[in-house]
Image (cartoon, rainbow, N blue to C red; front, side):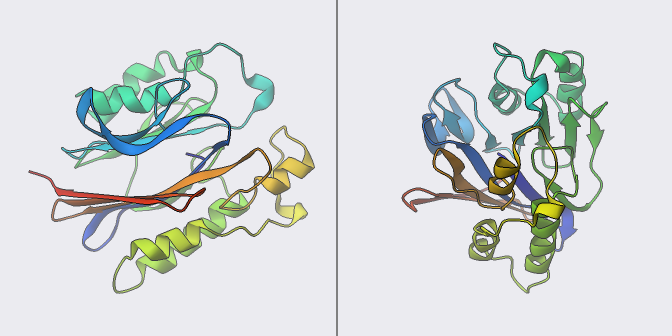
Length: 250
């Protein structure tokens, strides 16, 4: 993912509400969200180039998502795929904090990333450009291609829009998809300096990115109810196809 807006234990009836966009080069092959045949409890899309994923959940309530940390001058070719970090957590049984503690000992093996991992009780964050893993307190958060809650325009705007959606009587997936579809570019004076050109800072500034070769490939909504009901919705940004999944935790 390249934008993850989420509310953890911040809305009555929902343990987790998440709205996220996956941004990637259009030419990079990927499979849409589905149950993985070799790991039948894992629901996730799949990066067909490196084999990992950007977001996923499991039938027993484990959850993970990753964003890249934009710092092109520090990237090194040949490092392991960051998508494997999500797949490995979802396919394992380590507690969120234990998984991240072990990962932190080898975090510098990877190019920059931000990783969210959780289960039915806790949600943790670790960025390998941000020190030690930490559990998250209840609240509304935003994560893009910098550290958690770095106030880029898209993060500020997205968190405000999510808080507005949470204040409605019902949390509707369509309202979350609408906020993820915002294509307004930020003013130049508000743009971060992340090591790419000003032209690219502009292109990357909306919640929904569209350019000739790179942009938002899909949008995802996750609703994790206090009653154990899990809803996951994915909308393809290319053909508009939608996929929906739902189940109740045992």
